Image 1: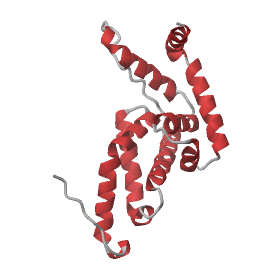
Image 2: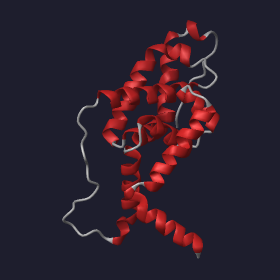
Image 3: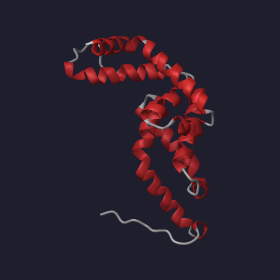
Image 4: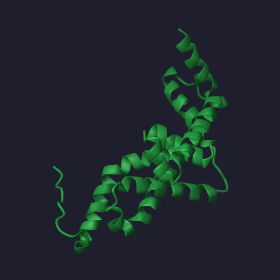
Length: 187
């Protein structure tokens, strides 16, 4: 059984409760934040580092952030900004293969191959388009919510999403899946 803490009174009068509140927030949203970060970075370790760096940066300001109407939007925005900064600083990129090339792949890996192809294509999008596609389609945020997180207009979100999806549809790694999908639709 998990005990919950009920905070009473002025939040400023309870300096330790702010830390408990932050811990509760992090525990409740860790998986979602890590998943979003993975989609932004394309690497599990980078994603965890991104989430930890972002949370470390916002922790000292949590007393102010938790009073916002939607603290999740603030955290998402901070994570996207942190991702952009990390992307700019990165000089060398690693190419990680999701399978060992010399081994035969059993048919059960088709879903892994599709996911790998999608992540490869997603990794080649510019950071802003990638952020829009991830927040809009994986996080299932509305266009207005994505615009609020990224600090831009809904028209910008629409155009970035349109361009990002067009690039994904035209990506060589996804070409087989796009033609297979159109054949399925014709049946």
